Length: 368
Image 1: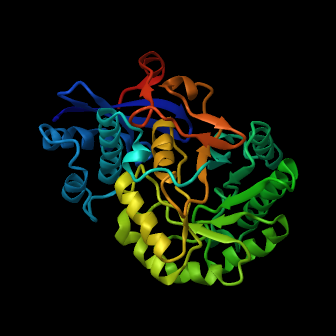
Image 2: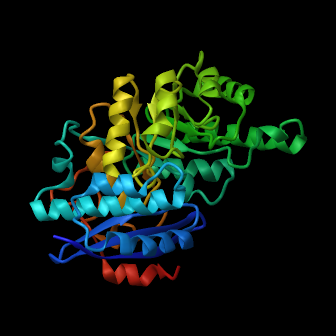
């Protein structure tokens, strides 16, 4: 079996971006699908897929390791890594279809019985008023999720905290978290993503302020390429510290693991080389006693790809779900995600277990 073509397509989602998909065609008539959303530049992403078409045409789709070594080089940049990650997901989809097996079986088999999800409500929360923001979280719990994540500090910068407006922005962020906790109650887990907005003193201050709210974790208070800063935040934190979504490949995670600067590693299968490289990252984390929780504010393709991987990881903790972005998410694919009581039911169909719905794709398609 040989690769005959690669093509990219995209749909508009909301103010936070688009979903971009890559399809890999073969001479056996099998078509694999992967997702390349949120690369930072969708136009450059589509151009990267076009460049890779000539390199991959005629190649055996099972040569995943060799292709990774050729394309996903450390200095290749986020766009190339994201393009390859989508192609890699699609190759696993093809191999699963050819074998008549779901991808998780090709990756070593399931060892996690249920894939616990948490609802990221940030991408659906266009209104940043604390009460409106908390309402999104309440509705996610109403939908059956038993864990919620918010990112309440996107208008905060530690450099401006000496100014009145900067201090007000920080207080608004803290108030959003308080309102979310009030809206979801004490029985639902609450995680907070800081999007690298803080320095160490600000992160420590925020952690003290939020301690009464019993956070499930504190995510990305400082950038992940600063393990010393993360260690300073982690000291005496009283909850899990999570980071890593921006990192590409095993080598980038190594300093975090060797210093034990995080309790939970957050890689993204859309960016870090795909499923095989992500599995290697998870194995490296396991050696250091670190749990993994993939970053997945994604469309349905990358989300189910991450789910196949997560089911094979003994150190898996929980998987992100981008709640409430669009009402047509389930219609975009044949074989939509099945979620029960806040857990994802993994598809048993061959490959990733879904295909793009051509009609819905056309209704929301955009040119890139």
